[in-house]
Figure (tube, rainbow, N blue to C red):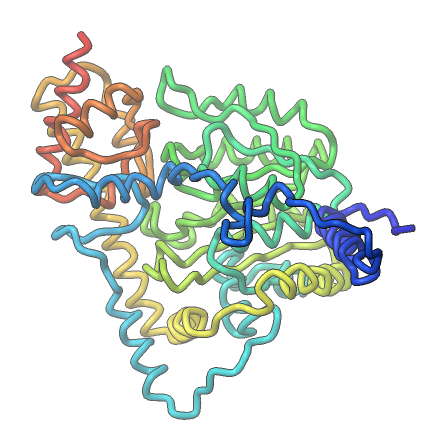
Length: 450
């Protein structure tokens, strides 16, 4: 008899154990035993055991770039993937990142040994301070456990698997809409995913009343995913007053907030301003989780640098939580990579380099804000029907244009402008040179239907 397992990971291990026992040598000792072809085996020894595997669809976001790369048009424009581009349309490596890397290269004492399961200790400590504030009582009271993970995606997955094993309520509410990967991450981790209203297509703003109504109906203990700032894909954030109402509702209902912070400093240009929502929830003494990514704000996309922080009631609880998070990480990726985390640690601990980073970070945020203004002005100059003020009101890397699927398809076919089918565009992919082309495409798409 097998023990009954409650967590998704344990159930998967139990199933694997039964499978291995069923295929043990003892099962093949019977001379009359015959082996029949399974659903995964080829028709003969020359066939592929994977012949039944069907072609999977392209990722709806990354697939935009695949289509873009196949287009030979010289005027093509990729506004799909959320990665910063310069005014010249080139990827950017921050000067402060290059300086940090050079310091790492020149340090002959550095080795390439494995990091601990929780990652680089200095990186974890500095990441928690960046997220919660250097004077955070939660940090001072050692109520925060922070572990290095594989960017924001990995941080979300580790946090989700921990919750699936150890939280009494395995339902998570995510905003509608949200980043396309959220639902998959939480479902595969073993959580039940439900949605709450967030975006109002009529106003192209926040459906605040719908948000409050849906969360008020959530069961006690349910997990709530919150975008710390620069909501993806809409660019619509609550005001500080609305955040306070959300906090009061979540605490009064006994819900557990899980923040996804992918754009700290990248939205407004201020690291502290973009962390205010998270810090409001930590200041009340309650528990919460936060997933951090350094992909956008340090441009470390391919380095996969992130952190998961869990704020607990006491230091003792935080210590025990960390011990269990390590059991999630060990069989998943064993321990995280050292290079990207070392870059972050060098920048965060050196005052001059930190200040240089904040200047470069604000320059990126300001360029995106400038692109919003230029696109708005270009549409107004063309007399494009509709109210486009939401382009200015939304914040961060993305704008939810309000364009429908057929309009997006028209723009791709006729103007070689690539974006996700929901009308989301990456403002970071625009430049002063390409704004007129995009404005022409939007104008044509909108007016052709009138």
